[in-house]
Length: 522
Image 1 (tube, rainbow, N blue to C red):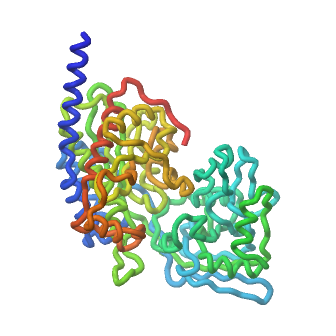
Image 2 (image 1 turned 180 degrees about the vertical axis):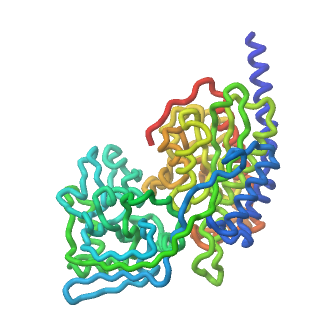
């Protein structure tokens, strides 16, 4: 009996190796090359380039042998969004007494109204609310004693610094530190708007990243007269200095106050006047979904996901205005397609169904994955786990993997086992202060209780960089959310092949587990 069991295990292992061998770096390269081509104009949702992207991925799913997993027997799940476009030229000014300061659109302030109206005007007092956090479990309330109803909350992103894991998670950023939370809490407090003062330190990225918030933006359609912020956006650190100077303060001092226990909100004695005109249109954008039916528990599923969208056409950088998004996230999409192709060819099929989902509007706040998580093709309680793929290095194979949040999951031991067999060491988040757990599409699934994680590469390379790859690495420094995130033929896809195979086996073993994993709290 023991010999028979060992023989079956050996046969199963051979079958898995044969299947993962079908996932090849050169096939992933072909997808990345096309998806990041100028022809697709940066893959912005609701644009010609976005539509081409959706159709390309659907065609690849069909060619791979996947069944449609979208609406009405199609590969497309429509995500009902509004395209909110600011018309020239938004105006924002601060005034106190006889003093008046006008800010320059995009260069000093950026963002959008959530009211989804053609005209938006605000004339309101400004109240500084620190980090804008209410966290009773940490005995922290930046809104204590403050009345921001009908006013504009001024705040920093991030959260109070900590080395104690029991206080705001120690160095790791909690959801309280995310800009999305800031907007949500300010709205709950009745604020008319939010201005986040940007600093590289508190945000974790340069102002050029948030500047993109001024471009046409997808938003979830507002239901009737549901409460919404009149303005949700950012001001540059320079603009923040101008504002705080009017109240006798500065950015450094106010950040120190915000970081201190016992902080209390501060009325700035300054009024803001905002005027914006908008064009609001319905967007045509889709999640692309395909599936492979399971064999034995087909009413349950494992999800593989990657976001297909990027930033489209924007500000020129050295003459280039197309934000191609080769790393972010043509790489993840190419891997998703090839995992799907290998899965569809597998015989016998795993117990559970596999859902392959290329989601839209990640760059606008995980909107596509959030919509899918709330409107799945099967109940979230029947989804065993979700594995997300977002941004992979073209510099070759590595010895380590970073699956942020994996330790939270009931399948953590499974993940450890698969990593060991792939000669990968699981490493913790190298930048916990950046809150990466909350910044990719797996978080949408986690909020629905689904065990979910993004599969990521580490940086411990199997081999040192050749001079050619050293040149690639240097060229890719600082390309995040710029037109320089472009594919070139000197990329090495061995690492993407490695991690697509790793992700395939993670999904396969989860799909074959006898029991559904327990639900999680994100």
